[in-house]
Length: 358
Image (tube, rainbow, N blue to C red; front, side, top):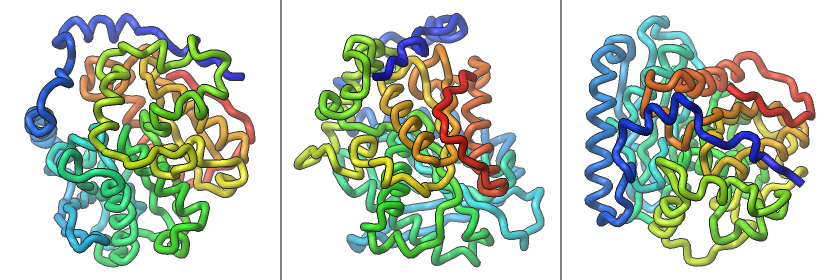
């Protein structure tokens, strides 16, 4: 049985930052559309400021991707200008975080440009559709449709189809993990015949539904009392009440333990994940989602998947928004960049579950 409680607790650096932010950090009683406008506006403003320095170093292009329901979603590519235009590069598909409610193309500009520049790759920023206007499983279908579209447009994007890295943050991590699992299981006809994924990057991912914790993740834990959903129930940025609020907006008609979209951890067996692409995890210690991510890392590593689990100790979910105020923010960026590098280097599995505190 597992006990990851040693990775909990707040760092002195985080406690200093926490004193500078409002309490509570966000009012989850707000109308969802009001909250969406407020959060997206703030994220876009911060991104625009960072792009003043990053913008000249990338070439961008916008796309309209058709979806299976006859609609379209937006996407934007970022290519480092330091690389010759005709070079075929690895590509990183970025699915943003935001509880399936927040996020726009513009809010992700700085994140994607930074990755493109430092990892010398093309980044495809996918703006999947959000709650409350679009509910389960729209975001999952959009993420898959974008992945399929990318493989149909490798020439236009000037990317190497054998070096496609899929990654996401929080809700985007859930979309990533679901896409990779469904492709691996071979039950999704649209995905299974596409080229193998080179690597996946799961940053603070959501991998279990809160209604099924007792029959899912908690069955692998030493006790409920030492689990991250209890220890970090009232954690800053993403307390458990926020997880519940975001999930309810998805309006999932029936929650099932074996659902490969919302319960990736429980839906995946050791046999299912064998042969899965190399995976890098970035997990926050002060996060209610910590244990489900660590358990998935354990499953992959022990099943022979090249896996690296990086634990950001002392900081909460979504801490990257505070940038250089937290030294560990650089480690978040490095996890993504190293995931792209894995597409080039093809890491070897160790078969051992190890947690690297960074």
